Length: 449
Image (cartoon, rainbow, N blue to C red; front, side):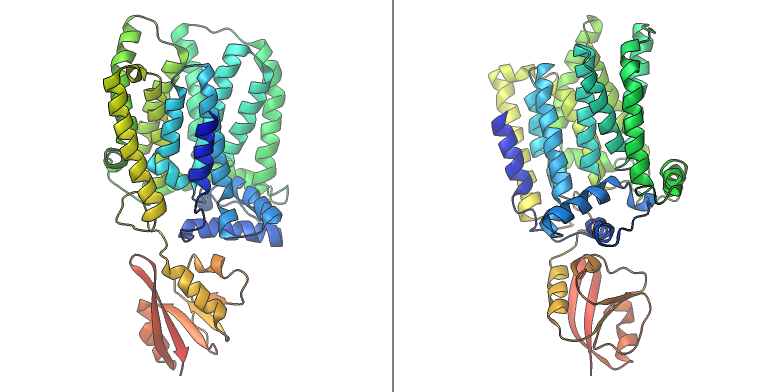
């Protein structure tokens, strides 16, 4: 257990600040910086839940607003998820296999070091699973409080948190239905009520921005659903239905193989009526996750982690083949290949968007441009119609640089997009540099003649 946790720490922290801040990362970091310094926050479904902003602002307040520190919250939660996966060993002996996938999965490792909400949601849900089955086994109220607090983190992190909570709640009703156990656990309800009050307080506090924006609670419930239904209808970030299936075959072949191997034993255990509640939940989570994310029009690489984890969990329940030399050899070989792919994408080629897992990633040029702006002794206007100049505002948060979708006279340097070069030249500027911010999007440095 200690060795796996040590590997988790090394793989999550090593060269954490080497990759440039991406578009979304920079927005999350910048809004956290504004929250810390100006005490301003307003929930917007397009930028997901408040937890990442308040927690990252707290990190900035304690340790400073560096790129390394900006990525600490998802790293910490990645370690929390790995810790809970190891704790699952009290339920089944092959839980470390689940941990190995969380450690070396290409999608999970890459996005565990990325300032987004998905790892926070996933890791918290693994903790919820642990809490649920721990309570079922031990009936200790601490697990009710832990599960509800983690649920509050899930719901205040990202809108797909509602899908996760819906999964565990609907499974409880599903279990009662198939077992015909409709009894009421009065002891659980006795502790569930105060736990829900605590969770609700967390939810309201964060979405209302510490009670300064009460309408934020409405936006977190009614409006957030309306927003994402609209995005689904508008086919925002649309990809074909097989998008994730292709990526699973390309990167996550190990957990896929584990699922396929486990289905045979699952079938036999169903026939023998020896199936456990945890096995039923594992299949239920796997099926619901695959259906939901394949059906939704909004498809992006970081959502792959929400399918890899249930595959790994289900597959690890049936890892008895590791007791045989042949099974251990195949698993070990696939794990080595998986780790190699994961390490290459995460540490060697992390900005190459030709990889399906890496999505419109900011390029090293963005840091070169930011450095040049910082060192320039004069006034700078970043003039990009559509405000498509991120992640520069994050990199230049300590500088006096103007960002605008409109052109203004009087600046020593104008940085603009390709479609505005001729317009800026007509204002008396000379082209003096090209910087690729992300593939297909370049910015140009023009100085006054």
